[in-house]
Image (cartoon, rainbow, N blue to C red; front, side):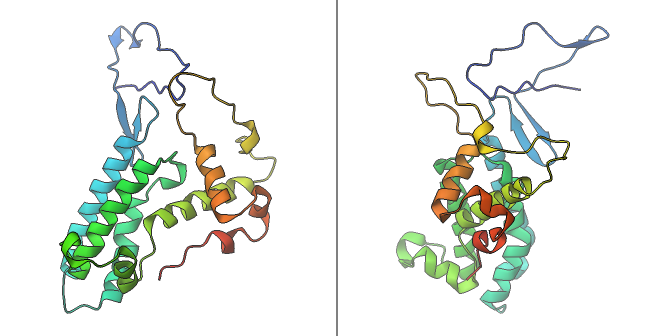
Length: 219
């Protein structure tokens, strides 16, 4: 048995003393794997991003017999990638307070997989744009699919009945961080507000035309 103390705010102090059950001290860890996701003590998602990329590569290797077979059409390879590899990369993405650096790492990992599938391994020498590569196997950008995943989950939350046991997620109810020397941690609500602004959406649209507006179609 072990325990994890999450500090999601810079103002939150550390716990005092040790945790013990019947005299036995419970070891404390800095990260913990729960339901397929890596939860960090600091509240960051770097370890979870790294783990998702590793799992994605493992799924890619498991299906490499299909993805690297030159006799199989690229469109069929794209379908295999969308059904097997991409879900492993995006598992839990609806709850990520993701940063630009995380998005870039996910994009780099995905493009390496896709270019390998298409036979374009030497990215600096072939001079083929990423959009062209994705178009060959009809795979949308993983950044767009992450945005779709987060907004789809946000739509579910907004459409819940007021009698739900869990408090409804209202963007205005998230407290603002106090001013400090370091930049405050990026919150999930901040990511959602940015995604809504990017697509020109309002929160109230979740009850009407939400699914059609957030859907990202593969090429």
